[in-house]
Length: 279
Image (cartoon, rainbow, N blue to C red):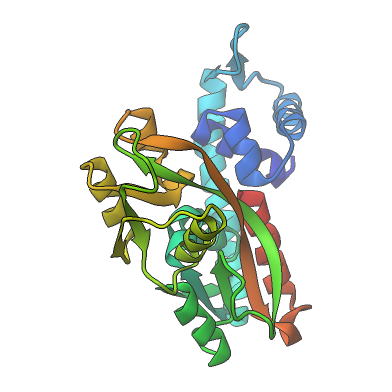
């Protein structure tokens, strides 16, 4: 019996969803099914009963017992690994812009905690200019940003892609409505300014805020048009509180940035790969 089969099974039962399990473990769905089948064959019992109409499933009584015991096995495995890794503790200073922090940092930190328990994290959240300053002053080991301004001296690689749109409580014209934008120096503001310039739009009024949450709340109250990442307003759009002002869609990459001399540092390369698996 392999520990990977147990890890796959426990994760599947936890999420109750094959796709989420696949994404979390970075395994293909066929591999998930193979692990479950091998575990069932090894134990000689049925663990899950699949639905004939969809991808849902229920646990058998044996499946419930294996789930409970499997969690204990994984805890023991993690404890053993931590004994080995304790002497290899690593401090890692990660800086992220406000947008990247809101969109991908929570899932990224969660995976680091699970997969790299030896890493001791220090997190800094600032706008783009302040993050670049942190890199220049060597106060950061890794930066996650959405713009490229000032990154010339560093190694830069794309790890994700984001979708930016204008949102409002109801349909409003861009040219004659107040725009709710991040402050100057923000990567999101840079994209907004570039778009407005390319479309030759001169806003009648700009309300600046350093908080995505505040910008969203102002838009919900009908006080203007917000320029935000789609991932930040999915719930509000589905509930009808905000509407996207089509066809204005801007796609932007998210970047991982670090010193050129650290290009071949294994942990940084692994973390960049981990970011790509999340998004």
